[in-house]
Length: 292
Image 1 (cartoon, rainbow, N blue to C red):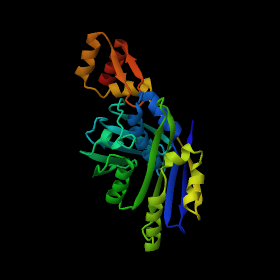
Image 2 (spheres, rainbow, N blue to C red):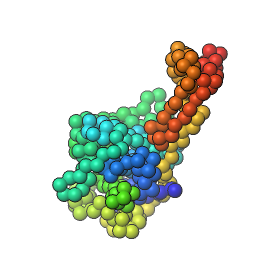
Image 3 (cartoon, rainbow, N blue to C red):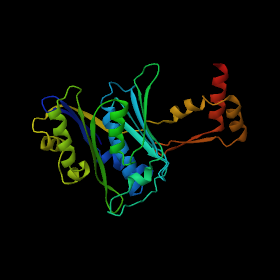
Image 4 (tube, rainbow, N blue to C red):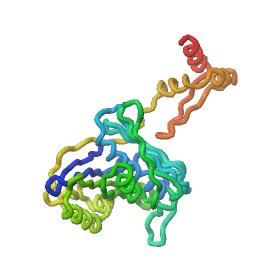
């Protein structure tokens, strides 16, 4: 199922807004990775913000990859989106269930704060652009706001959340990124700061039945909806894709696997599918490499 990212402007064109109801995407990821609640929230928040970042890309060949390495128990949390609205990701340990004393899921402790958030934008040029910041809270939204301020010099408010039902399914997930244009006046800056303090979590508002457009209009009286962009969970892995990947291995490694007589198993980190390659297929890859 496709979700839609809504792009809007407000405050006399001084503020740009990107927002999404990502409930279906986060549910798909949670199901595929068998996530417990805190892992689901950590991965879901990262997928949500990354999908919004992907909405600024122009074509399918452009990609943005966001990686949290905070050395917490969740391990690496990675999400990738492309310019066609496809998003995918994984979490190192999907079995994390940590709760704070206030009853909220402890995403910050799961991700950890002894590490970095890395954002890589591959725009099809010779070298991708990579920005890296230290993780401040591990709560995802705060860290992305810090990334925008430091690496892209763009003052931003990042409101992202995931609500998980007692049975482990996703009740609601969503995100909103509000960014100031460079020439915004002090009044606009103050208005945005006030708005950020009073804005409720996106996941809460979505769980109450509000659409993304409802939420934008509630907080921005003069909001002008500019565009809707489809976004969906999509891995795109195939047997042929991984067969091609096998050809990047050294000849002696392929020969060793062939001689073993068991073939090869490749596990896709994004969707958990397993691909089996028979000894005959390994021999074919090896012979093709030698011909080339």
